[in-house]
Image 1 (cartoon, one colour):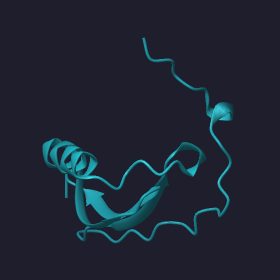
Image 2 (cartoon, one colour):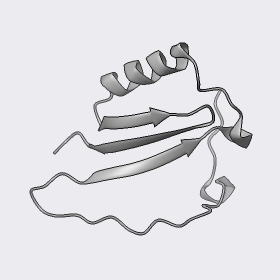
Image 3 (spheres, helix red, strand yellow):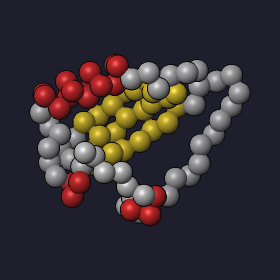
Image 4 (cartoon, helix red, strand yellow):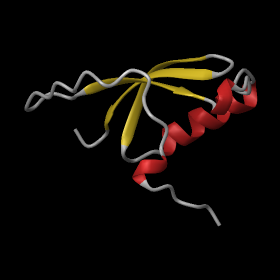
Length: 83
């Protein structure tokens, strides 16, 4: 069974967000970076790439755009798929 974390158990951000600009009738495109725990180099293989593409393509909440997969982190653009 997967344990859920309370809000105070999440790690602190090193750089706080600068906010999100939202305009009516236009999609809001966001950029994010996600790192592996302890920056473990585990993402630089074809299996991880294929799994991410499958999960992203099945998502009904978010549409993932351009992305870069590095050994220990991923950069990607995304937006709400409900636009």
